[in-house]
Image (cartoon, rainbow, N blue to C red; front, side, top):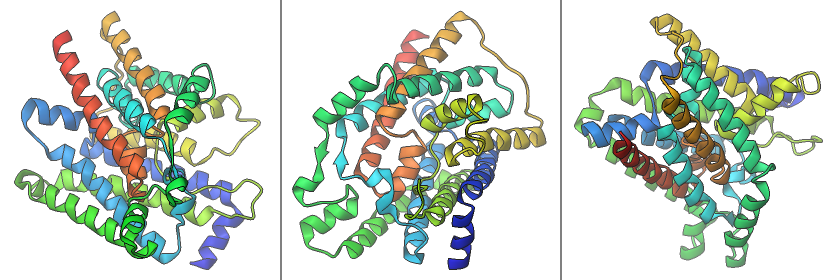
Amino acid sequence: MEQLRAQIVENAAVAVALGGLVIGIVFGAVVQRTNFCTMGSLSDMLNFGDGRRFRSWWLATATAIVGVMLLRSAGWLDTSRAMYLSPTFDWAGAVIGGLMFGFGMVFGGGCASRNLVRIGTGDLRSLVVVVVIAISGYMAMGGLLGPTRASIAATTAIDLKGFGMASQGLGAFLARFTGMGAGAAETAMAVAVVVAILAWCFAHGPFRSSPVHIAAGIGVGVCVVAGWALTGLAFDDMADTPILPTSLTFVRPAGDALDWLQRYTAVPIPNFGVATVFGTILGAFLMGTAQGKVKLATFYDVSDTLRNLFGAVLMGVGGVVATGCTVGQAVTGASTLALSSFLVFFALIAGGIAGMKVMERMD
């Protein structure tokens, strides 16, 4: 393992870019093949009483939690360096951003990752949606909307260090209020969360007897684990600009990808996020081609265009305010057991349900 780490660290930028591309290809292929869709999962439940795709989403989270536990125990990953476990608990950003993103994905035809997959199969609407997500996300990070977002976060965020905690991980809360050791508390909390999710998922007969939905959840979760493994091994605190541990997320990387396309000569090697964006599109294209499902499509009319643009703006801004999306927070972030990630997860669900109710009235 140390030899592998040394080889990755020696060529970290290239290794992370190539690895991110491969992980993105696999992710895009899995999503296209299994029809994994977070917005679609909410629609299935509300309109047809079918909770299988919704359980796939949660199974992906449980799979990622297990993977992160194994990576940490093997010494491949130090999650304390991940942005999700910051002791600054931005509860307002989690709630507001999650609601915005969840509401927006209904009008935008799906979340950011789903739109990337649709680009790969020829949907030009999704290309426009992703570009608008990228631009609006950058506006919320450090552009026109950046100061307002930062001001609200600074005013409402809670500094957990004042409560004697260096992390917002659920294990840290358990250790703080029970006196358990940090490692034991993290393991206990991870096991409890995973067991609860798996029990709920597999107690559902239709899900238990649906291999494609089970494969979808495990496949997406494994892709997230692979991202953590790659960037965890690439971390070098002696580097001038260390590559911090991270995994799949798609709002900021969509903006970074747009930026990279315009500044390639200055930064020829894309970062992990940018590589996964292009990999996801390529993976969906390859799988879609094999399925015979690649076909050009565009907006139906003006109202369809406006609806998608509205949703894209909400997803771009909401994804930055929440520091992630349906994959970036609900799977990648939740795999670290960060409190804000689970708060975003539930806000995404609430926002998505609200969006569908509004959409029904509009139709």
